[in-house]
Image 1 (cartoon, chains in turn yellow, cyan):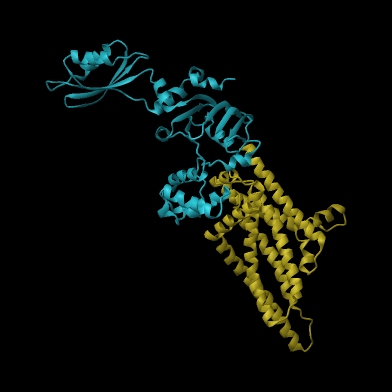
Image 2 (cartoon, each protein chain N blue to C red):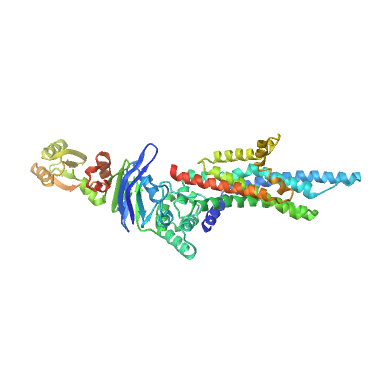
Length: 254
Length: 297
């Protein structure tokens, strides 16, 4: 575990010494800031109308602002996460530094977990940006905290699964662009599988059940469901497991 | 310290390493030589547990590379052809990272990093980014060596002068097969079978006929080739190659003096490792070299 932390620290450092982390954080801030502004604008207009007309519409910050915003966070993540994972292994394979790691007395799994953990922590930094925005809602309104926390847990699990998939794909190539593009395509497919629930046929329901979105819905509603947690945990495990197999093949094929 | 026995590595179509055996004793610095594609990198990668051998065994400090890779990796410092540097790390930080990977920590790690910085004279670029170091990799080459804490070194390279300066022992492979393992001095002596001699000849009366000297020298029995290296006024430098096993220094000296010229200098030209290397790897019968016997089953 100590070794995984060494790797994790090194990865985090390289995110934050290079412009990568700052560019991602800035772009994320701009994009999420716009979503927040637009969503809140609609909410304010709606509540204004409600007051002007004298009829009280049911207004709820959690339902009308926070939940759609957090759902959007997952969508923005779909675009940002491949950029976090694409360099993890591809860059080391290109520059040859992977040879240093592989010939050091640490286990493959420690390397993989360290890298994945660093990606998770960078994602946490991105999420922290969104937290600042919500603090304003707590200052001027009184949203319910518990569903927000559960939604964040859902976001973390979902991102964990997506990052594990990205880590695996990055270990397959030396080319960061290929890693990024492939990850993006795979994640989008996993996303839109939810749309295949159009007929009553068993296979279409199975496909839809495999989608990343299907399992985030209950979290977003503030409900913790064990089966959704297990789904994400399984994806994380599979992603990291396949990464380990891919690293092993590096030894046999090279 | 390092024992390699009958080591082979086969790829789908080629055999990169073909039944190689050699030993490196503790404290030795060994040059591992071979032309491009000879199997140097493959052998090194097997020794560092980067990839497994197809057959044969290799042990480092008594630990088998297949059975106990972790123990082996703890005891080696490996610097691949492309130095594995992270451009976004500072020198000292990089050393710390490598040290941590090796399992060092705390005061011991700090001491080791300081030692390496001092020892390899990179103390003044301690806090510089590796990506900004000019030709920093040469220094790092030494850095990792020292960090490894190992006392046996295999230097795999095709830069021969480097080997000549640092190694007492060399292992030469070609096309995956062992060609020779011996000390540098022995190899040079063995390869010198055909000796070449440097001569400086001068004339007393001002002018020196190069072709005359050349003819005279060529007439000495046992001489295979005479080359005029260069001429300064009435002096000229010749390189004489002699046939294998003939000692002709006396004959050559006599030939010069008897023709009325002065002999200013006469010395055997030491064969550079490069010449030895070329001689050994260019012929196709490695069995001819006595040292290769160990490689045969």
